Length: 162
Image (tube, rainbow, N blue to C red; front, side, top):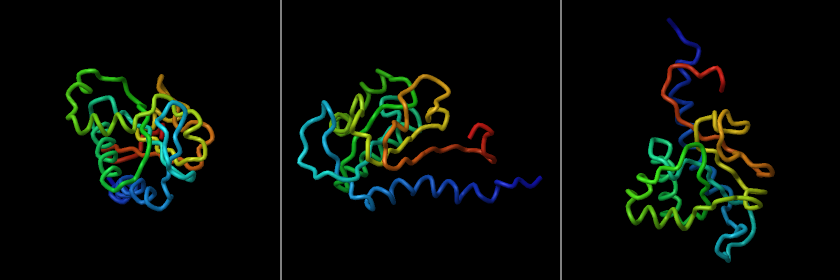
């Protein structure tokens, strides 16, 4: 049987994979320091606050860590907020020292005013996006300039709740 979404699967996945990478260099990406963060000499302007399950194991987490490493390699500053899954202490303890250092430099416990007038990436399954279907941090927070929903899902159709 023919599915109306069957031919859309690969282009849809490619757009979801590439959109955040395309947005990062196009938006200027200077992050001002948020409350409780280290002081920064970065000029004001658009920036990225990345909400993802950074402190959990699984596909979303490994993908989020890969984005963090790629942004660091490219010299693109952004802030990370744990979102969309529970914290896994064994996972955190098992991270390589380089990943722990990158994450420690980027992680923000509460984005507060930092997310306002910024690009917010909600990198989780859509059930964690506001209004979430279960307890998690709010993504997107109010006041973000742009919001990008970043997800991945292996299927032959789009679930009804999306």
